[in-house]
Image (cartoon, rainbow, N blue to C red; front, side, top):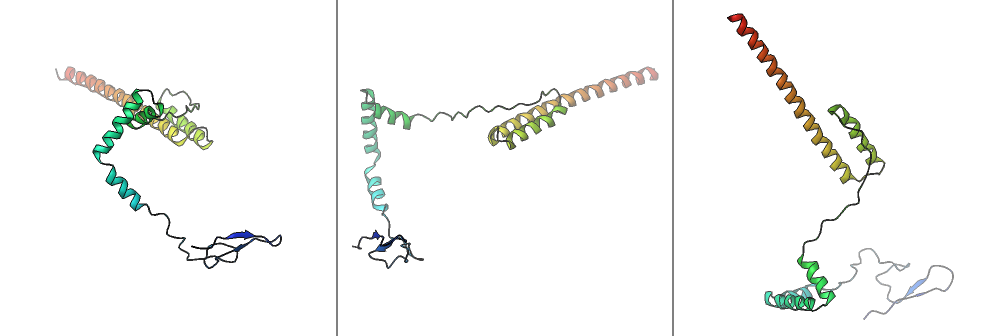
Length: 171
């Protein structure tokens, strides 16, 4: 067994470690290349637990915990509920920042700039800014679909008018 080290201060200078110093430098620090010791062996404990935790043993433990919970053991009830129910989704605190009014696709760049400004100022988290940007993109697609529908309708009306003109001239 290694001798215990203790700090001894002879003067107001750096304390000196007394004891087995073969693995330490003169200031008491581990020397380069020191393995640091074997540590605690976890393997045997884990193997023993795996051998003991059979499905039948686990079932008995669970039945006992549920029984204790039913008769009012709050700790047992907490464990049963904590590990049997799904975790509720984490609620993130609401983050608020002002966006300009969006009435057309022309307003989207200003709204995007407002999101980036809030993000860079730290008033909104990156996930919240991402959600806002996705919403802006959804609005953009909606505006684009409306504009395409309007243009197609205008082209169809124009084609219909030209068809009428050509029909009257041919007759």
